[in-house]
Amino acid sequence: MTPDRRTLLRFDPAGLVVACLLLAVAAVIWWDTEALRITSVYGVGPKAIPYAIAAGLVLLAIGNLVIAVSGAAPARESIDPMAVLLILAGLAALIALIAFGGGFIPAAAILFAATSTAFGRRAPLTDLAIGAALGLVIFLLFDKVLTLALPEGPIERLL
Image (cartoon, rainbow, N blue to C red; front, top):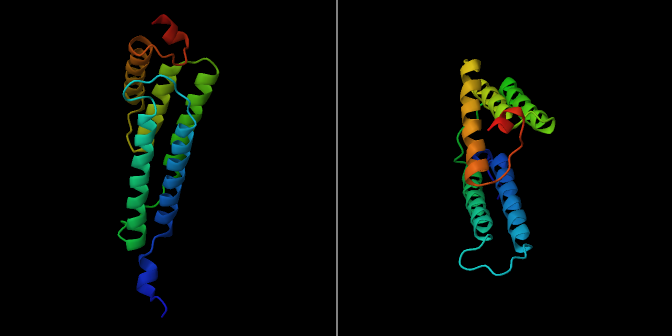
């Protein structure tokens, strides 16, 4: 008995690929967490969160697999290449600014403005200001509260 055309159209190969990729990422996280050698941990240790993330990814993979096999996935939207290029340009600017000593705050501001423009917002100066404010808050939280170092530039050195 051969499957009819309607059954073949219901199967979503892209959903199956996403499910497999999610399972692969979960397996890598689980394997990497197993390789951690931590001594003298009382209570919940640093391995708990990676295991929780891996378990969450497995659940997402199962959900994607069920949707892919049942054909319940919604119709896909067409891709906007300009939006993808804007986000990639924002990421490239972030990497370049951090690599060349520009600092975290201006890099985050440019990434925020590029991403918001890619999503259709048309207020680049406002978005730069919002991104700078968010970058400042994130930098201060990491630097002053968590005492973790983010890449510093001229602005961050003033703080």
